Structures are given as C-alpha cells and as structure tokens.
Length: 150
Image (cartoon, rainbow, N blue to C red; front, top):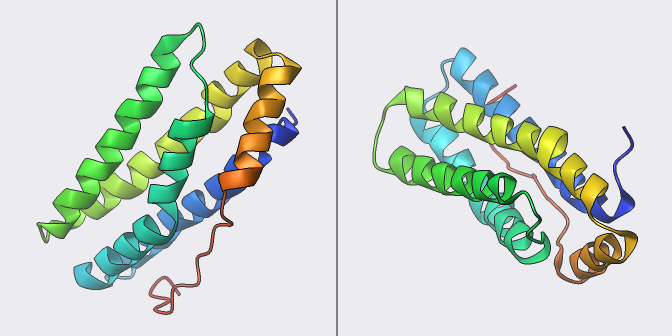
C-alpha cells in the first residue's frame, strides 16, 4: 500500500529507526562493548528519536480508535524507560530489548496506526498533518562517527 504523502516524512524517519535497530543488533553480534552501543543509542535519541516522538505527539490527531493512540504513547514511554535503564546498567539484554522495542514500535505505526489514519481521516485532516509536519519536522541524520556495526 502506498503511504499517504502527508505521512511520508514520518515514514522516512522510521527507515532510520529500523537502521538504528539493525546497527545495535550488529554491534551485539560482533561483541562490541556495551559502552559503545550505549553511546550510539544516546546519540540517536538526542539527535533523532526524541524529536520524532515529540513531533508525533504534536501532529498525529486522536481518532475514534483511541486504543491505537494509547498503544503508540505507551510504546513511547517504554522506549524512554529502556534508554534510562540502559544508562543505569551494563546489562546487554537491555540493548536488544531497545532494538526490539524500537523495531516493533515502527512496525506498529507503519502497519497499523498509519493505515488507520489514512482510512479514517478525510483529506482536510491529512493535509493539516502534512502542513504541520512540513513546518516542524527536521530531517533525520545518522552521521554517528563510531561505526561499530561494520
């Protein structure tokens, strides 16, 4: 299914999020130090993911299916908690948990939440999302220097 043009910027962000998850998993497979992967997660959070969450909270409207909105918000909270835990621990399982939570969250939005918006919002509401996104969105950048995943 082709993504509505008003949601494309968020879908492009999601591509980088999936790449972030992949990089973390590659680092784990290569036995890269916890600290190096943790530093990347903090970089990605500060430079991209925190802003992406804020933008979603601002531009994505509530719909009749409030359960989807609640799930999205709960997953945002879960990911924030995982980042906090990662910074207070050395448990490598938390890194995989973060990669999985991020990947699953993106899949939820792309496969369930966005199609729901596309089916249930009229053109005027979708255009309002797109217009607002165009004003506040920043282009994702993942130019992290320590390429531990290679």
